[in-house]
Image 1 (cartoon, rainbow, N blue to C red):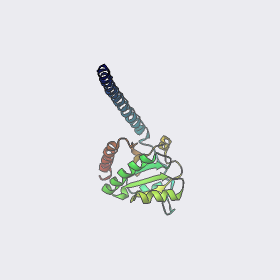
Image 2 (cartoon, helix red, strand yellow; image 1 turned 180 degrees about the vertical axis):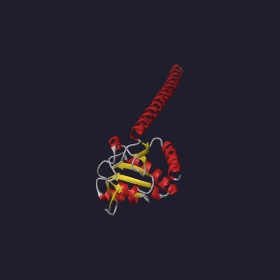
Image 3 (cartoon, rainbow, N blue to C red; image 1 turned 90 degrees about the vertical axis):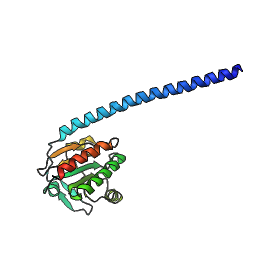
Image 4 (cartoon, one colour; image 1 turned 135 degrees about the horizontal axis):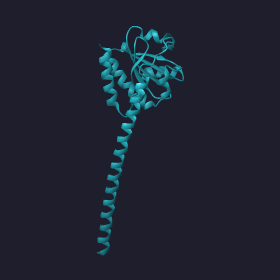
Length: 193
C-alpha cells in the first residue's frame, strides 16, 4: 500500500513538474517571439526609409523568358509599377509565399501594374518558376544588381516611379503574411489612383 501511495505521489509530482516546465517554456517563447517581431519590424522600417528615394539606372538591361532585352526604362516609362525583386539564392519558402500574394495582387490591379525582376542560375529554373507559379505578370531576369537594396540578400518589393526612383520600399516576411497583405492593399490604392 505504501508503494502504491508513493508511486501516485511521484506521478503527481512528475505531472506538476511537466506542467510547470511547459508553462515556463511558453512564457519564454512568447517573450522571444514578441522581441523578434519588434526587432524585425524595426529593422525593416529603418531599411525602408534608407531605400526610399533611391534612383534606379534606367539603362539596366533585363531579359524576358524569350531572351528579348529591355531596359528598366522600357518597363516603367508609362506609369508606376510594383516591383518584386528576388534571387534564386533567397529562401524558397519566402519567395513562394510572397509570389502567391503578388499573383493575387496582380489579379486585382492588373498584371500590367506588376513587374518581377529575378535572378536565376540558369534559364531552365527561370522558365520552370514561371510555369509552376502560373505567372501572368511581366517577369525579367537580371543577373547583376538592380540597386543597393540587393545587398540585403532577401526578397523585397517597391514601387518604381516613372522617374526611375524607388518608393514604398518593403521587405516582406513569410512569417507575417498579413503585414504583406496590408502593404499590398496600400500599394493598390497608389497604383489605381
